[in-house]
Image 1 (cartoon, rainbow, N blue to C red):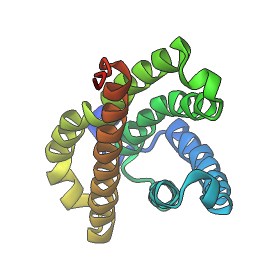
Image 2: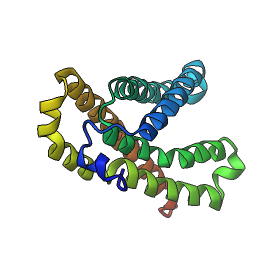
Image 3: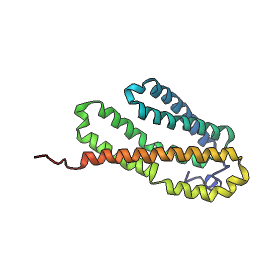
Image 4: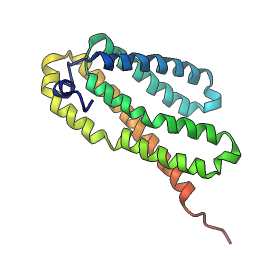
Length: 185
């Protein structure tokens, strides 16, 4: 994304093969994980399951459009980079299932790293994403179909809304872990 000058020069139309390979792998993962989450909604919790399924649905449809029409590769790679936090989210979930681990230093350390990485890749990086989007807008309007642009904007803003919401929950959870608990007298 940052090392390919052609991709940065034309984030709308330049379509490197490796980007499409990464998107194809991601579509397969998201489709499979969608089925797992759908099948186990009660275990995961219905609200988080629906949010996750929405996230995965948008990813599958959005990346599929990008693959089929060879469009918006820079934006797709940017979105894929946000998954850097997923490993910490999954580790947190595994640690949280065992009460002994949930109060461990490892749980707190992982939660802290998860919060930092989640913020850096999913929330803190958004101004740069939208800067590139605005910068690429004239090229986008001149070369892409309206429905493709609308899909990019609607799907992207929906994912961003979910990520900001999830970050607020993650931040609240971290603060409740690290704040000293007041003792009632």
